[in-house]
Amino acid sequence: ERTLAAGWQALSLPLIPANPALPAVLDSIAGSYDSVLWYDNSVQPGRWRRFAPGDASSDLPALHQLIGVWLHMTGPATLTVAGVAPPPVTVIPLQPGWNQIGYPSTLTQDVAALLSALTGGYDQARVWDNDLGRWLYFAPGDGASTLTHFRPGDAIWIHATRAGQVTIVN
Image (cartoon, rainbow, N blue to C red; front, side, top):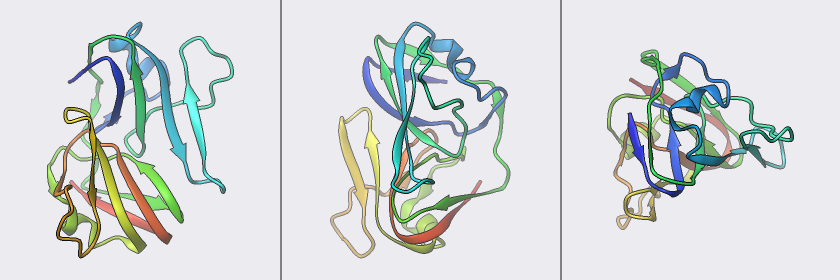
């Protein structure tokens, strides 16, 4: 369960939804949102995919635990999604450039520790903090980084310098 304010909210699902299809996965907030956006970097160049209720041109068919999204709320609502806990290990592929991924974990984890196992390469990770209304970032070796932990429900942006994968242990 997650309380969402009006405006743009960044989020992911920390569990595997029973029904990931859009709009079913967002039934609990039906009428309180008008757009879901995901940056798909699996095709090059990367492109935005979108779902809007009732819009036949929508090209984002599902919201699952591997992706992070921007959700535009037209009013406050509480999101409730039925599902099961993620497996003990989840591997998410990364392509060069920016990747908008989910955080399929029910645990809060240290950013540096989690990203130390990332294969390929990266130079930055970011999370939009909905409560603070600003970006938090982590860059290896940067003592001024503001992102220290990934939390359940975070939508993570990782800038990969080459193809690889991130492994999330639950």
